[in-house]
Length: 415
Image 1 (spheres, helix red, strand yellow):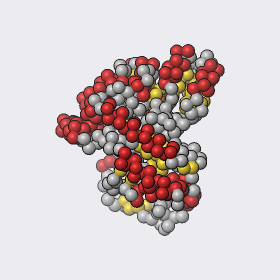
Image 2: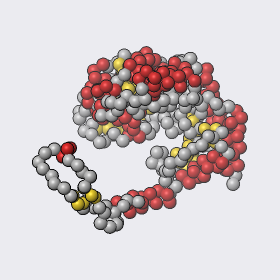
Image 3: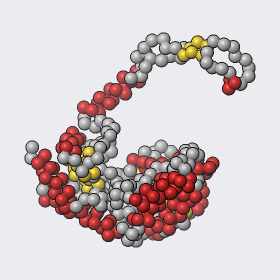
């Protein structure tokens, strides 16, 4: 609860015109004059109560160990891998627990530069920059690069870290229907000559449904209509591509992507994000104009060390990646056989659409009773009437786990 506080206070002692820094403030006493019924708390509580009634209230839970964790994004189960822990420990011992400063002061350390170089080589780009989170990386790119004479074309189901930027600045934007490249082409044809620069932004593997666009066709559109292509590979990295470089690597279009955004907090088992490109000018611009990069203590050395170690493991683990996707696809087949609504993509992310948010929570809790942790995803993260369970497959899931999940879900459906 918000306590009743006002600005009344008493001061004992004398002040002169000198700096307040040198005064003894021990005799300054702040006092409350009684409870204050502030309208802020009432308004906030009313909005929370409304969310609770509709099954949309979010809460924090301290989750103990589960038998089967299908809610996270640690696709290769590397966060406890000995080599990843050793990478974090080595950076910790060399550079300390924190960068303790903005990267433009003393926060940019050799471990950060080493990681950038590894990412550039992996993703076949010549310039790059690390950010503290994927949210900040997407915000930086979409806030600072497009200008008032530009246009952004974005997939309708683009991640919130991108969608939140659209419409806030001077740059105009339009959305095309999810994965509808025919509509994207229509928008390009109508607008490519009306703006100085057109940006096209999409995820590779979409985070809620695990579906993905036809990237070679997007590359062909780029040849016909010269736009700047921004691709978020947060969920494609590691699981797709001959070296785990992502969906763009798997579909052979890495060279066509102008700006590649990705995260260190999923397959790479750490925290942070990166922006990669062939334009050194673009990176220099973000260094100079991106508040998301400038005005924050940089990611810690152990995070950088862990990510670099995970990257090296993933590059040699594509048999594991194929197994992850194969297990997820078999789960999709079982869902369809038993009358559940899902999709027929082959990524590691499997949605089970139940519609009502209360049903999604109920099914999630039923699975949790059996030690199986899946994500109940509800509006506003997904559209109304499309609440779902999101299953995020990893290297520890096989036929036995799929059988257990299906048994519980089918029993719940028959209730």
